[in-house]
Image (cartoon, rainbow, N blue to C red; front, side, top):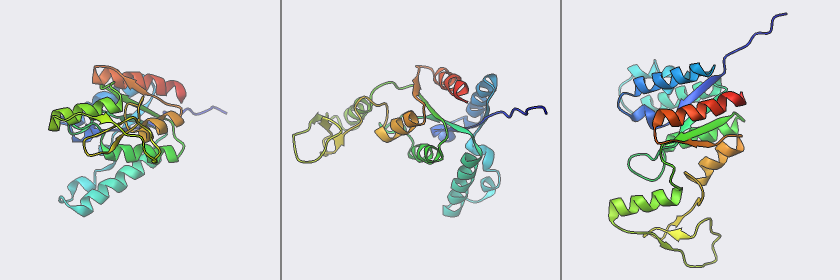
Length: 199
């Protein structure tokens, strides 16, 4: 009996869906996946029916369902964790997808062009947006996952991480890591190469 080999199907996620030229970017990512024996799929690939609906709540829910169904059909996920909308944090929808696929026990990898630690990103955001700096957090009774706080008194956590610790943690718990490079496609390629060896 001949053993059939199937090409692993990889969910490609991130704020890419909001970027200019998103379709051409995804095509480049799919081409890189193919070079490593993987089938990359973009959220757009499952949204054909929803794309013809008028803007509104029901349309967004149709997109969410289509993305969930696509994730269910994939073997692994590759996630862009770049800061989103000039902030410190990544796209929140992508963070949800990381949690969803991690809960399914699927292999995950991340990539970014921003290798600064999460607290560094938070501080840079505060300086750029409000010209204010972080400060040392005073000792108190609350458990702490960081030593600094922002001008609103909110803890700046996840030291040693590239994003919120839940994001880095779930990717790491799946056996993955977040690849970093100055060039977007280079960062993605590094993550694809690692993932292809895991599947």
